[in-house]
Length: 498
Ligand code: GLU
Image 1 (cartoon, rainbow, N blue to C red):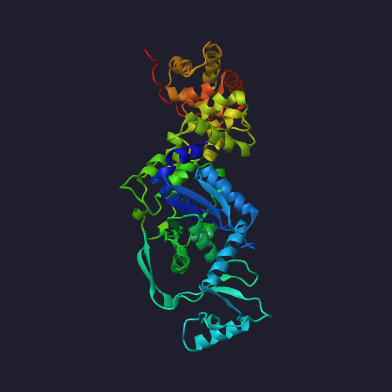
Image 2 (cartoon, rainbow, N blue to C red):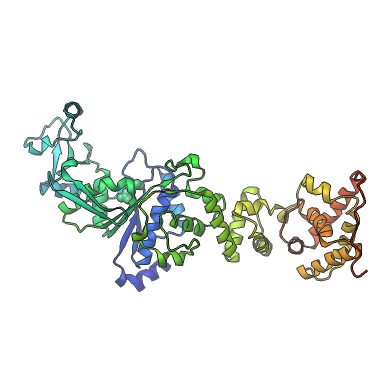
């Protein structure tokens, strides 16, 4: 609906066309997501079009699972495509037609060389200390070999050079003499990767190719083919790699690298995008970006050409920043999702509790997973007290406070933070102790541990019934503890007002 609206309103302005073209051969990792993000941002910044294209021609390595992960990941991240997903495996007729066109125009030729011939060619070239490459011998062949299924090779220009005026790397010059005649269709007729990319970028009107710089060496070949086809050339921007903190290429051993894993770990998509946009791109010294701010500020020309290192701590920090600023509904959804693996399903009528807990915990959690783990006691009774917290706070000394608190809270007619706070203050002053002496035993009694949001908020969220039941339990626990060993008398503060 929103996409449709964008099309209708902005179509006349659209001229930039970018695409994200993943191969579904593994997981959707952080590096690919950054490529997708930069392509998406560039299109959105220019009110252009963003295309999703699944490059699944490698049938042995492509899997349906990997396609699903790409689609789910893009959806979770909110990187919405204006067109696609296109699938290269559904475009074979088109590739065949372009192959025929290239053969007819003399831009491609059938090559009948056998494996053995190619091997001998290579050995001879190496012996002459030459770079191994196909020597183009089938260019001149006029007779087919009926017993051999040929491959099709692109007739790369023999001399001259190709200038890639890259938006990130600057001007990179390639000599045609260094490029041999690339196979564009295998002997079974299936087109190869570089050829499909060329046909697709041409057919889809891609104006800006933004991709990893592992593809920079493919670019001069693709430019030559685009020229042979009379297509206009896109602008290229090759993004540097993302490295692990140890300087090695980012891989599984650097922790979570599949994007859906971040979803499971309780990251906000906007935080992940914010983190990724700063990997190799900057806008003054601004670190925090909303989606809209990224779109407004992003320009591919500001991307740095050196590789950037992945820093999980910074991602955690950013996630917390985004959690602190997220609207209640986003917080509640994030918390609910992370409660799920703990087997806590929040009933629709407990939605206010969910939102309240998420609000109360937002400053204490770097991820929703952390938030969920620290919030279990709001949704179900805990099994055991934290040992240290209980032995310090649920004792014969605090037992009277627990009793008075139970009485005071039990008699409240309005259950709200101000009223709860009032009771705690009264109990403290009546007992002649500081607030903490009362509040901390109460906290341990109702949460099982020593850390929670402000105690009045915590108690209010827990509700009357749970709070009173847990106070009873804490009193029994405190009463059953052996008397604390005699400690030297500590001077107590005089009762308030006394
Ligand atoms: N399919 C390629 C990959 O996943 C990307 C090709 C391109 O962007 O041109 O690395």
